[in-house]
Every structure is written in C-alpha cells, then in structure tokens.
Amino acid sequence: MITIFYDGKCGLCAKEINYYRRIAPVGIFNWQDITESDDELKKEGISLSEGLRLLHAKDNQGRIHIGVDAFILIWKQLKWWRNLAFFVGLPIIYQVADFLYRYFANWRFKRLKHCQLAKKEDGKK
Image 1 (cartoon, rainbow, N blue to C red):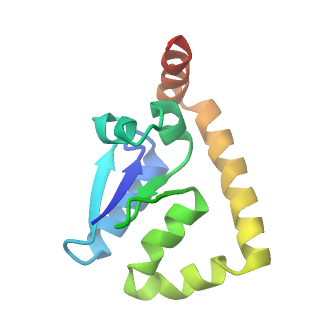
Image 2: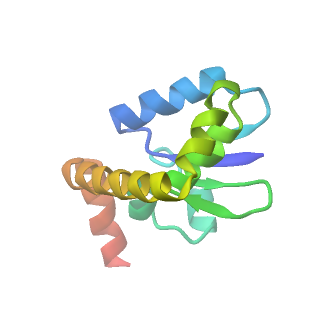
C-alpha cells in the first residue's frame, strides 16, 4: 500500500487529496493527515515541518518520494491521471514542475501559521 503524508490543515492540499481519495481505487493508498498524527512520518525520519512543507509518499517498496515525485507516484495509480504522470516525468518538464512546485510549497509554508509553529517546534529539538 502506498502511504501519502499530507497537510490536512492546508485548504488547497486537503481539497486536492480529498479529490484523489474519491477517485482512487480501494486498497491502493493509505492517506495520513500529518496534522492529526505525525507518528508514521517520524518513523520515516521526516520532521513534521518538512512533511508540511512538501508532499511525501512511501511506495510499496518502502522508498520515499518527495514533492513532484510524490505526485507522480499518486497519478500513476489513477486511471485518468497516468498520462499526466508520464508527461510531468519527462526531463525538461520534470525540472520545471519541480522548480515551480518547490517555489509554491515554500511560499505556502511561510504563510501558514501551523507550518511556522511546526518549524519552530522542530527547531527546539
């Protein structure tokens, strides 16, 4: 089963993940809202603030996929999204998508209070 670690307090993130949940075949994904429990995320050695900053996913072989790679992993499992996974995985497209995603993710992270609180908490450890 593929585990998706997502920010359930981010309106945009939650909306997108809820869409994927509705269209995903049963038994493919384990959806983990890390704002409710970050235990599984921490078992992977990922801090809460890093999990909130970028989407993380763990595939069936236990490999962690981050950011655009996590989206590609999700899309490959969804019937109408497989073509997008292929397209975004192409070399130049991938680099542009990765840059844009990280830029947006950092912008979003800096503006959400719960993300900044997690960053502060992680900094204390």
